[in-house]
Length: 303
Image (cartoon, rainbow, N blue to C red; front, side, top):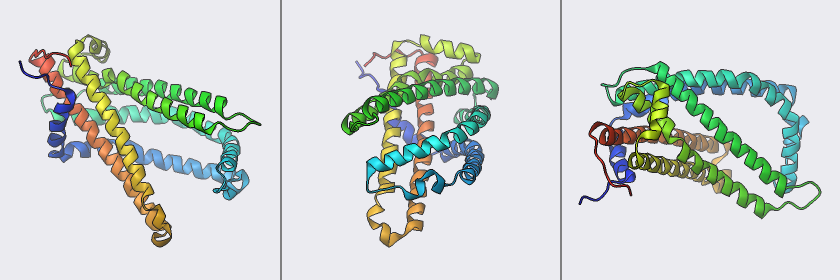
């Protein structure tokens, strides 16, 4: 009996396949920055407007005590309370517009990626826009749950007029953050396989979403496995980017602030490009397992 094929085994081959076709990654990068560049410009303009109304000196951020973390935390907390009303007003106006723009751009962009990945697939941006909107709503719910969890950790471990429980706060903050990160990998796979059902099986967006839960245990196991591995890869990329950003700090006096800014920018670009590359690898892996389980009807034992 042939050994069962694990999702991680197939991903190694898909990484090489995507690496040999850089145009796929370039399309992914292109649509993301088609949205991201104007969005960052708007955020920068709004930040400058807020700082003009409430300068850093007025908020107490010009004299942050970097040698005393607890005093610095109090200073940042005080400044956050001052800036919160200004930021809330901006978010109320900007968030729905940005969400709508992202859904449209990502729907069209992902449609182009799938078309380039497999020319036989139809170009259906409207259905893809709907699925991207569902993905964004699900991400927003998980992110809101994480914010509530962080609020609980802060309220129970950093109380006024008492010594903060730094160890307990750090433990719960890390544990819950990794927990929500893993939760997203477990719950997001239906939204990531649905585009293939939309395009390959000519389904409506709603039908594609509902059909994801009837794919069979073996197929679903492969999808969850790939999603978990990609989540770990994403976490590793974040850690690697942080290491690259922090490595030059001991030499900051010799390098100067300008060189450090360039290195930090390079680490950020590295993460963004690598993340986009692995997004394509994930899609390719999902496509290959769709062919195995839906097109050829292969049935492999679950592992």
